[in-house]
Every structure is written in structure tokens, then in C-alpha cells.
Length: 295
Image (cartoon, rainbow, N blue to C red):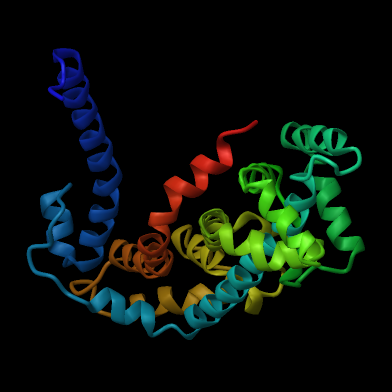
């Protein structure tokens, strides 16, 4: 079929817009990468540029020499692992009964969920609740409040509703119960939406810092993004990032400047979560589209 003139015009405009969007997305990332690999003289001389003239790993070596970075890495990995497990397990367990049309008060529960998307308790009530539960300085204070969100729940519930009900009926005719149907039929067929929800949760937990700043007073339990924030604002009261500043002060400024260290730290923190995208990208279209068809 030969595309019409209107279709060709639409494709050209669409291609140009997507190309511009891709460049606008990639340029900041490439710029930070270039700053982390450039020498101080190149940074000040060239201004905005995307390729380092004389790459050097000095900034990365200095950042990786800080032992507090590994502690923050471990704390973030624990948080992300627990967060993803809780989000996937609790969201799927909640969405499955809500996908059943025979579930009592199903409409009322969904209305309450939608209500929670528009109104929340606020920061102070949330802090008081976490404090009363004794979760201050605990990783559970970062994981449990976001374990079940209305948006993820609606997406997963809609995906479960798209699974043919005949599979459920056939399994029950063979003697299987709801738990068997959920574990052995529904979950294996729901890999796309489970992967999407897991990636969303992983990115959210990896990048989160505000809740850690509120609930984690112990500096040994701070996460990567909070470590990065302390360093970028050059917090003199934070001993975990003071090593970087003092180390820099003792070194030759001709080799590295704070901009190098900040850019290298950003790249080191961002790199692990970027690796997750290629392995889950194939599930995105199917997982999101099927989970969003029904309202």
C-alpha cells in the first residue's frame, strides 16, 4: 500500500519531533559524561561540548576512592531490592482480587484508590505515622509507604482483567483454587506488566532522596542520591562527603576540579539503573498498553 501525501507528511514531522526529543534527552547525559572525562582546562576553554578532547579517568579514581560511596551504594541496593520485591508482591496480590468482577464492593475499593491519587495525608502526618511505627532510621520507612500505589494497582488490575476468564474456570474445574490460579496461571502470563512495574519501582527507589533525608538520620544509612546531594551542595556538616572535598583540596587543581568530581559521581550513581532499561524495554509496549486499555 502506497502511503498518501498526508501520511508521508505526518511521518516526516513525527521523525523530526522524535529526533529533536532524542537529542534533547541525550545531550545533558553526554555533557555530564564529557565533563567527567575532561581536563579542567578543556572545561573552562570550550564551554558547551559533547566530546572530551583528552579523556582522563582522574575524577572517577578520586570518587571511587571514597569508602562512604560504597556504603551508600549498598544502602541503595538494599532499598531498591526490598522496594521492588514489595511493590511487585503487594501490588499483584491486591490487583488480582480487584480484577475479579465477583469481588465484594469492587467498585467502592476502586473509587477509594482513585481518591487517594488526588488527595494524600501530607508530609507531617506521614512523618508522625512513620515515627509512631518506630521506623525512623529503618529501610522500611523508605519501602513501605510506596509499596502499593494507586497508579501501579490500576495498571496491573487492567492487565489481569485482560486474561481470559476461561483459563480461570478451566483451572478450577481441575481442582485448582484461587491461589493456584494466581501463582501458576496469572503470574506467568503477566510477565510484561510485572517487568514494567518492577522497573518503575526500581527507578523510583534508586532516584529517591527526599524521604531518606526525612527518615534517615544515621549518616551510615544514607542512600546514593542523598550522598550526591550533600556533595553537590558542598555540605560541610556531612562527614561522608567531606572526604571528597578534603581530598580535592590536597590535590593539584590542574588535574581535577569540583565539576569533574560532581559529574563523575553523577555518572557512577546513574550507570547501574541505566543498565536495567535494555533488559526490560521489550516488555514496555505490551505491558503498558494492555494494562491501560480499560479504565
